[in-house]
Image 1 (cartoon, one colour):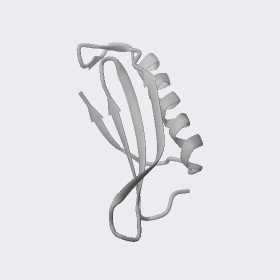
Image 2: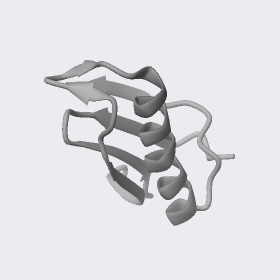
Image 3: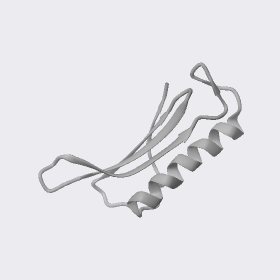
Image 4: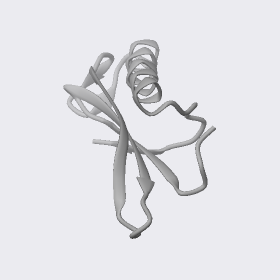
Length: 81
């Protein structure tokens, strides 16, 4: 479980999906502590065409980000390009 000063963002694009985990440091600046990038699947021209494939790709990016930061991701801000 992440600390209260942790933010997760997921960017879902046509070619790649990126999950970032950031944490505010003592100076109030955001420090990236987790990254997960996967090739997008189930997307075409910015639209979801296969929900199952898109969901799997998003899950893979989130899993990679969880491994790099050591937190379980439960909530995120999501951007769909």
